[in-house]
Amino acid sequence: MFWLLNLLFSYTASLFFCVIFDAPRRLYLSCGFVGAFGWMVYILFYQGLSIHTIYSSFFGSFALGLISHYMARRKREPAIIFMVPGIIPLVPGGLAFDATKNLVLLQFGRAINTMLEVTLIAGAIALGLLFADQISKIVVSGFDRRRKRI
Image (cartoon, rainbow, N blue to C red; front, side):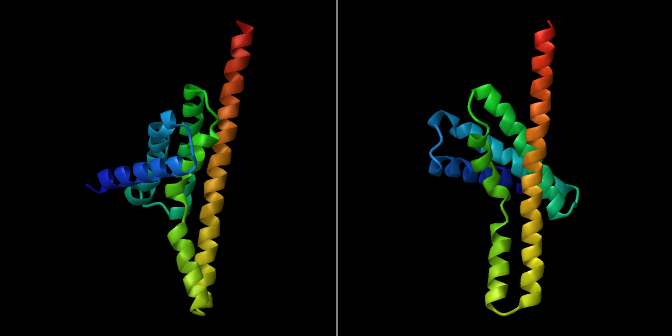
């Protein structure tokens, strides 16, 4: 039941942000699928394998980046259309709110630790997308070189 709820809510969050960002209507379901896929990889690593949230965010965004590039080639659209709504479930907004709340309440020790974790998670998300982008470029250029030889 836990896995099904995570799948459903991450899918709808990505789908609704796809609507907010004014993506083409025919891509709504694909964008929702991409976001749910990235979140489920995150949950698999965080809950299933008990890996820290920073590393889980990296692997979730890496998987999201790879599936975004796959969908972009399949649907003949830019990959950013799938990445931006798909990354929304992975963004540590609640943790950033806690850091800000601790800062306002003058609990500087907690605020600094939480803000550092937020920064590391955001960096892990960015690195995951960067690695996925580079790997997809290597794979695509390898296919193009192979095609030119034939």
